[in-house]
Length: 469
Image 1: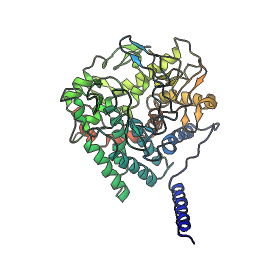
Image 2: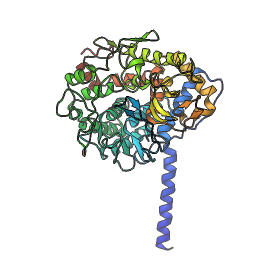
Image 3: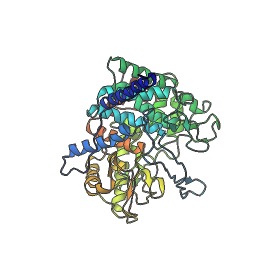
């Protein structure tokens, strides 16, 4: 037989064998439609599992990182600081292809993968292999003093600029990534070669991240971005209250390149927008903007940080998150702009896609768009009200907003607009925060990490979860 033909036969055989091995080694999670009369527990199973499919089946095939979104156009709705108003979006801006992966969304996907193993949707071994793929890829991908960019090409590891000046390190997105990886290091603690290898890879990423670099020459404040081309030109300090508490906690928890208490106290706490203390709809709000701002403030940092009993100085973080959620819901019930569909079973204003592009929705920036992630990621704070919203979304609106990756990103009944998109940073919190409501899994893992315990102590937090030793 011709040698070339033999070689081709062997090559084709190898390809078939590899395909067979891949199909056997990775569990396929079957999507489901609307199933009537589920128990509350079974409904949570369905929603978590189907939402996890976004990370498991839509994760980048080369790197395993979480793709930023399931559609390619991300129309931004930019805040014009000079005029204190939102610019109209240009929906042709920020056109991303399937290669665009989100570093923060990847951290959320890692945490969702831990949930998937815990719930037995996938095996422990295949989860470890997926996480090893991610860690190996990131060790050779673009980073800046160990800090990763906001967006990355999932095939090449090259930075994808988020903006004209934002083409380098993003300390906030990196904090979400490291939160996920440290939870994985804590969870995958067996003595198998694969799990030891994964932990070693995570340690390499963790120990090389230079959080202190983002104090811009030892200023008592963290800065969000650094660029190898534009240096500190973004000049955007990380100040509270918002989604970035985890950034200060991770930065303080680093065992060799961590920030001091003074950086946290000056940069985060002593901010004009940190403390509130006013009441809205008769509900006191300890921290943050009027009416609380978008609900993801109560989700992103607290996917790992357990707010139950967590206090610092005069702040009770459980009260903050519960009351922020209640204010957001009550605004939708009061519905001052009379939007169609709003009510006790249809609430939740947070950042996400809208008919005007990507908007940070809140009671003070209410366009009539509900993001399912807002109510669903609030399950730990308002379990009864979140279940009420979940049943409405699934049973009553499911024909419009339920999909192969769980709920779509947003909808507006007033404008008869229903998103086709899914975002990693919105899907991940649904899986993780529902799990924290059900089993406290990620809270338990994160709060047991010795580095995190040391970081929380350094910043002056008190919690029954923090060891006194």
